[in-house]
Amino acid sequence: MSEEYDVIVVGSGGGALTAAWTAARSGLEVLVAEATPLYGGTTAYSGGGMWFAGNRLVREATGEGAESAADYFRAVVGDRTPRDLQDAFLEAGAEVVDMLLEDDAIELEAFWWPDYFGAVDGAAEIRQVRPLPLAASDLGELATALRPPLKVDRAGVPRDPRLSGGQALIGRLLLALSRHPNVTLCTDTPVTGLLAEAGAVSGVRVGEAREIGARRGVIVAAGGFERDAAMRAEHGVPGSVAGSMGTEGNRGLALRAAIELGADTDLMDQAWWSPGIEHPDGTTSFSLWFTGGIFVDTEGRRFVNESWPYDRIGRAIIDAQRAGSLGERFWMIYDDRDGARPPVRSTTLPLGETDDYRAAGLWHTADSLTDLAGMIGLPAAALEESVERFNRLAAEGSDPDFGRGDEPYDRAFSGGESPMVPIEKGPFHAVAFGLSDLGTKGGLRTDVVGRVLDTSGEVIGGLYAAGNSMAAVSGTTYPGGGNPIAAGMVFGYLAAKDCAGD
Ligand SMILES: Cc1cc2nc3c(=O)[nH]c(=O)nc-3n(C[C@H](O)[C@H](O)[C@H](O)COP(=O)(O)OP(=O)(O)OC[C@H]3O[C@@H](n4cnc5c(N)ncnc54)[C@H](O)[C@@H]3O)c2cc1C
Image (cartoon, rainbow, N blue to C red):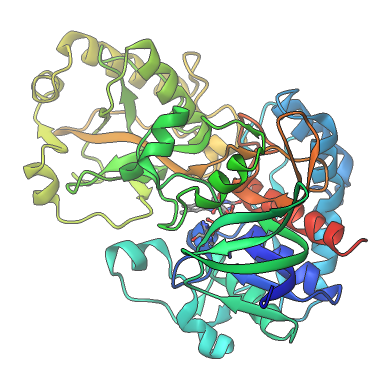
């Protein structure tokens, strides 16, 4: 083949760039093939938090070893994913951080963000690391090829010349890669097929007909398929493209190519979910940091701890929708203590003008709860009863109904105080919500070093997966912030090491 590399990495999110960087450090010749005109994927949209068990920076900050993180992760995930896969993720995390810190392009710090199942043994409040910010100008020409934050990409907000969160993570990895002469970075390079010889993957097809050989392996780290409506429907993923925060390129193209070759999959109906505030254009966006409000179902009753981590709320939404007690659109009820705008501090995409939301029937205001219930089609007596009970529990400072405020994460946005804010100061407001997601998490089944397995459980030679292209090691749970990116980076790292024969 005229065009050939040791390793081809498909995609350019956190998993992909870590794989490319690891392979490059081992002296391999690497191609990073990114389908869209910009590098970074959903990772570039993210907060850039990474959950690595027992890593050096968290150890230094808290004195914690790897053991309690491992116990916690195993207890949360249970046996939905193979134990040896969980162990591989847990054991390699600290190593990945050590290696990253050897590169002076990469600077990280530990930070506070409570685990998402605070009642499970081993849950901690400081377990993640994040990249230190850097100036976009440090990236030179590569800065223009870095996918901007979501609010810039989708809502046209001006770009910040200082890169932080996921921007800094992708920026730093690109900077590190740009210093390796054995790495070729390519945008506009969609992998549409996998080439195979004697049952093993030997390269990729790009676009219609370009063929590129891979001497050691192809690592599919091409995100999930959240932006492909047909594939979502085929696998029964709750939610919709309009509610997904995943980047435009995540359409499952490389996943399909692997499936065609006989690869096995798992968890294909799963995503990283969240409640999403609804916008006049019909989209919903990942929302958290609620400073008040309760969610109610079609009966006007609360159905969830509104201060839970977003994926836990997302799963409660799906359960209620499946049980028929919640529509695709549902309502948050709140009072006027902070005005008419919704008590949601992080909506991922900026909220527009109040009048536009009112005209679209998404925000309502009334002097009484009875009138508000009429506007949004809920039984008035039940809504009043729900609010009355909630106010009573708020005054008592505990929530025996849904446990709101029982775990550290619940209190993360209320300065450690109870997040139960009474709904008593009229006028009263309702804001429409739906289901949102951060991307799908079902994908190719792998062994402990990211080698893709076929439907008989045998390794497909030369084919690896990481990130949301891989069936997630966390199964049907979101154990803590930073899990998606860290798992992608760990399996990208392990896959690249396997390619290098380490
Ligand atoms: C607002 C927001 C905040 C978040 N914050 C965090 C956080 O702090 N910590 C955390 O762990 N997670 C966070 N997440 C979730 C996390 O960002 C994603 O789950 C994760 O980044 C996915 O990484 P990935 O490497 O699998 O794929 P991605 O980063 O999505 O990258 C996939 C890339 O592959 C490309 N691609 C797809 N198909 C092909 C193909 N056929 N050929 C070539 N290229 C292809 C895509 O264009 C894309 O660029 C957040 C998500 C959002 C939306």
